[in-house]
Image 1 (cartoon, rainbow over the protein chains, first blue to last red):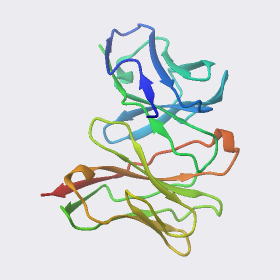
Image 2: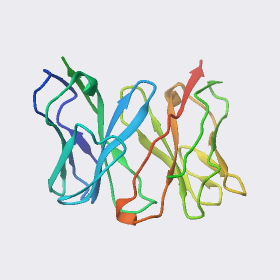
Image 3: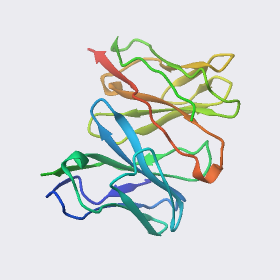
Length: 113
Length: 113
């Protein structure tokens, strides 16, 4: 069974903390994505990566960075967490190409207090 | 990126067919139409995709207008488990390895028992 695994289902962090959200896929996919989902705003793309050490900004990259040192792992980093980054974060992976099916993790609900 | 427009919400009765519309009037000739759905408390999951011809799979059917400016996802016999948010997405053909997946606001489908 294919899997995209996010390290935490729920996370509570303090304002100003550095936060790491980890995502691992076991399908040898080249492309990986990070989204955040907020009520009324849908899923918005933060960053994506199409190869190890390769990344591109999505629609809302401000306040975030990413790391892809190994093909199977894509990390989202909040350098200094703020309350407006409280959200549901979703990771996805695919093989390259516009026909590819994307597989999503279960999501991490992050609360910044 | 070409945009899609979907109704915010729809309601249907259990065991009846459901037709979920999507408008994509600015679609380019090589954009594929994908549908995903997101069940409560889960990440999105792939449903179906197509280019020009109508498509069927075990989950649903996809009917694509002749001018490709709209499409309809058809659930032939809705069950309570089909209650979800359904997203219509266009996958661009740009640089295939970096094909982004951009979600719209989707349609929240409710099923009446």
